[in-house]
Length: 311
Image (cartoon, rainbow, N blue to C red; front, side):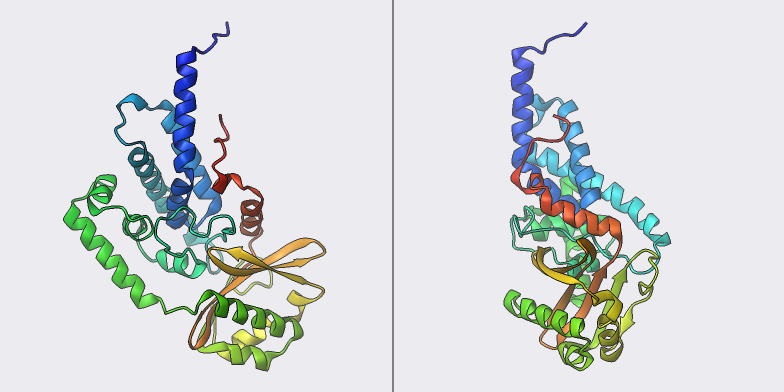
């Protein structure tokens, strides 16, 4: 027998949906920064929605605190298992690129960047350190709020965030501004397409490193490639650029390039640059990650706050 929901229960569900939609970008932003994966972040957000549905919401004092806490704890669990899975990954692992043309900050209160290079450095933190850093630096949570979410003392949270900051400051460089980054990337692609190795070398920092994420794809470098000459030769690989069409895209709050051939996206690439030139070139060849990026471009629901899938 089918029982019609009461008007009261429908109103309650409508309110639950409205609250969740209001905070969805923030939840996705937390999960994505924690995991470096569009797909895994979406899975976490969907699971949070299911929990929110089943929760006795009348006793929840702060919905955003409840949702943020659930998202962070789920993301920590996923991150811990992901670290184990990535031990068998073939070659360098890079975060999934994310289209940020609709929301460059992916729901962050502070203008903390989500460049692939930064997300890659964040991978060196353990999941709890990463959570504390993300909540504090990207979303401006108070130390007491983070302590409650992570079930730590405020003193410990301060130490964790401070340790994470020191670790990241040792790894990061002062990047060029957006306009200069775009100019360098344009020049890099132009030189690479024409096989102009000398011009490529002139764009690169002496200690440049190239990382290619292909998870075992044939022809994809399985170790980091270092040095101007080697990176320039690799980047000008003729087979990659043959009859290809590069497209500049907004990715992770910066400029990236998707290389197409015959209507198919072959690779996503971007670079990190400082005053010394391009010091890191990142190539994503893994089909699943390219598909996730293209999907993030077409699914405006991530940023527009659409109703969760299961409603």
